[in-house]
Amino acid sequence: MKSAQNQALRRPGRWLLGLCLAVLVQGLVGCAAQGPAGGPPGSDVFFDRGVNLGNALEAPDEGEWGLTVLESYVDAIADAGFETVRLPVKWSGHAGSAPPYSLDPDFLARVDEVVGWILDRGLNVVLDLHHYDEMSTTPAAEVDRWLAIWKQLAEHYQHAPEALAFELLNEPNSALGDPLWNTMVRQALATVRPTNPERWVVVGPTSWNATSALGGLALPEDRHLVITFHYYDPFDFTHQGAEWVSPSPPIGRSWTGTKLTPRAGWQDWSWDTDVGYDDQIGLTFEAGWAGFYLHSAQPVTGYQTLVLRTSRAVDLLVTCGPDDGGFAVRTEAGAEGQVALGDCGGTQDVPRIIIQDGTGQPQPAFVLQTLELRGPSGTLPLLVTEADAIGTAFDLVSDWAAANGNPPLLLGEFGAYSTADMGSRVRWTRAVREAAEVHGFGWAYWEFGAGFGVYDPNTSSWRNGLLDALLDKRTSH
Ligand code: BGC
Image (cartoon, rainbow, N blue to C red; front, top):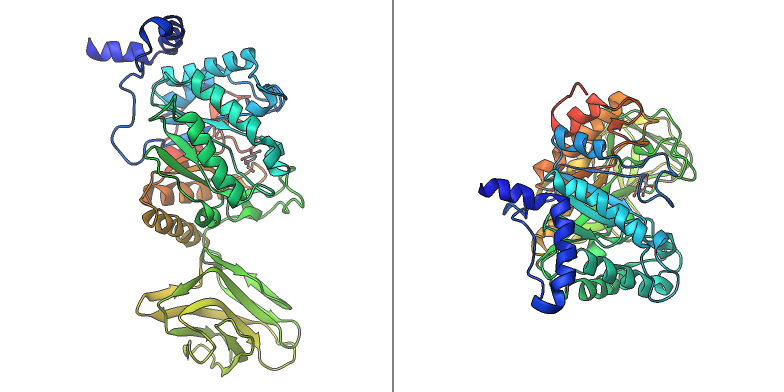
């Protein structure tokens, strides 16, 4: 009986009815919180095993991008075993342009309908304010309107179950940098908290929610924040042929997971050097004094030695510190060489490693077989496989969380576009999902039924390879 009652409470019909009754009786008896016992199960990861219902309600008008949410989609999502739906919504396209910036009631009712379908199936929903495009160009001019939208949404959904979270803004970027964004987050919380003191609020860093931008996010004192970030690396793979990216990366790049790449946090700033990233790294110095240059966004500490190995003897200049110059090294074919960081200009912090042509002449290709730092902190390979690069990126997220009170973390978007080959998409999707789980992050795949779709709305069927990569299961429908 009890569970039947809880079931009934989860039904959107009841929830919306509750909302209406609460509004009617508010003046007389006030509003008791109506949330059913459908809240977090006590785990740090609550908004987990999700899928983005993208390209529908965040289009200028639903349907304009080819997808209108059907109740049967939500059934399919629940039946498949997903637990969360992230629902991107273009609220800014359906609010007045002058104070009080009223939300269009018909649009709000439509979102309510979809939210109700999701909650009705016992799923969580992350209600995401998506594609507020002006926020990327003239953010300061939009803050009042954005806050007014959140005030209305917060009031409207204040009695919704705890399974509904608010995501303040998808992918703040470009003109919206850390100082303004950090202020806006505080303002939005001050707007939302009076009506939703314990609502889970999802917030992510700038730079399109990049993991590398987490350091700039100043966390407010708030016990109900979920921190989100997105992961689309290697971008040239996940966004090959993407029409909305300029220049669009060429189609044809596969993902095996075995190719080498700089570890997360290190960028390739090489010059006059052809760097062949494959299962091995081939280097060709195309001009005298050319260099293979790895730059670390966050200087690393705790190492004493740079270890390198090349396939043939090469004359090099090695730089490990902030000063230019370079320490002359002649490697031996296939033999491990060690350079003390003090010799190549390294200080306590290593901000960069430059392996430079030491001859002043172009040089034929050689293979860089080893490049790593060693010291009391252990061994840090600077070149890792693409599969391991996911883990190294997520390690940095975990490190950031550990230094910031360990908030719950949500990988709110990851996916590879349909222009990539399906085998690679499946491999990559599984690798990212598994790495998220190993790190204890909740996740939500981008997205359900459009260009990245795990589901094909034309045939009403799942793309089983992707579904299996996400949920370890296949379905026949
Ligand atoms: C954007 C989508 C895009 C996706 C992948 C999302 O945040 O809103 O338009 O397809 O990222 O690039």
